[in-house]
Image 1 (cartoon, rainbow, N blue to C red):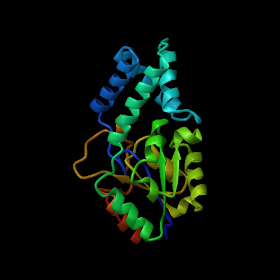
Image 2 (image 1 turned 90 degrees about the horizontal axis):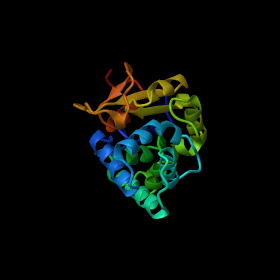
Image 3 (image 1 turned 180 degrees about the vertical axis):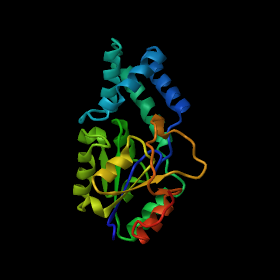
Length: 236
């Protein structure tokens, strides 16, 4: 089969994974800016993450305000802005391309493939995305917080293909297996591929990976081989 498009996950795929320690430290800095107990802030942040990642028309500031309301706190505007800035600065640090990410995207563009990003995320990610070296190389970006759906909802995959102008069966989906994204892609007719770098044992941005027995690659460059072979190679 001739594939026309490649759809990528973000963290653990195009960009590196969050570390648990770094993530918790960043939330602690936000809590400090708001004069809130770090443990309480982190707990509410985690427990509301799925809900916040599917609420369109919000911002990092409104996310912070929501957490504060849940904790019964009333910080002033300057504290909210400082906490939001702290969050954005942290995301800028972690949203760095994997070693071969830009090279792979450039090769795909030169070969004529359409490229999409599909990410479950909160509202700071689209803000930082526009500043990255990824942005000019990706044709379609779908953020859960912008469209009100999360992987593995079939609708978010279908929306991605509609905006790309292709059918699901004409797409390879590459991800690290968080949020049951590979099964979700398979269920709508895509060709899902797990990316798992050799020796990688990290948890993908604080979420468990799904069990996957399908095609697996160890680098983004391997996706180019899959495309040349029509989806017939890769390890399992």
